[in-house]
Image 1 (spheres, rainbow, N blue to C red):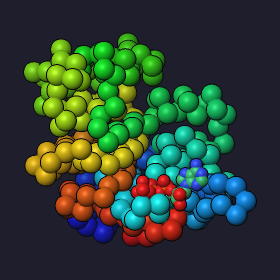
Image 2: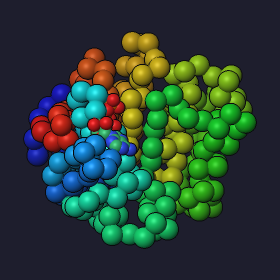
Image 3: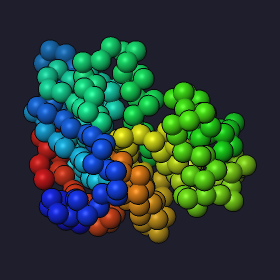
Image 4: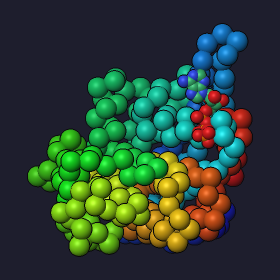
Length: 241
Ligand SMILES: Nc1ncnc2c1ncn2[C@@H]1O[C@H](COP(=O)(O)OP(=O)(O)OP(=O)(O)O)[C@@H](O)[C@H]1O
């Protein structure tokens, strides 16, 4: 773990990474609920995650971590502030454009893979490419990517034929196959034991650096933080280093 000094960040960037914009959030504020029940889920949040950087966000339950991922992923529009993904302001986009940004520029990894039950590992990735309009170009080769994440021997398996760690590997490959600029990861180790949790977070760090993806992982698992380049804390909707 480092504090993310400039020199370290530059060291982490593979060639070409500087051409990508990563994630930038400026003055992001989000209120949820109505009337007396209104909660400030995000309170003037500033965050810059560079291409190829792997940042973790920790904080107590209800502090705003999921809200931050939702705003960064163009799922929720903030009340104020702006969010740039690879240089594009997603807060000003129409619903249709937001959906396109999500498909083309943003990858999501959930707690336990969230794979489609009927599809093989290979088809999970092909389907993601289809949805992003990248089946014939612009994405990674699905077989090569599955091989890279250690799943080359399981391409024909469906989710129920895979272990929890294997499902998570396929979920990570699926999120990366479209070559997103930003990868948003929500509690990826919640369903895994210690050894598999370390494997999965090591893989995320490797791919964030190798593919120059700005990666944000929300986690309650403090044991995996040593694999991250930066750790940020969220308390009452405010983010601090
Ligand atoms: N749809 C909603 N309507 C009203 N308040 C909400 C809504 N969603 C979340 N909140 C509130 O916003 C705040 C931030 O919630 P958020 O889910 O972002 O926290 P979190 O840090 O992800 O929590 P956890 O670690 O438990 O998942 C909390 O006070 C929560 O109760």
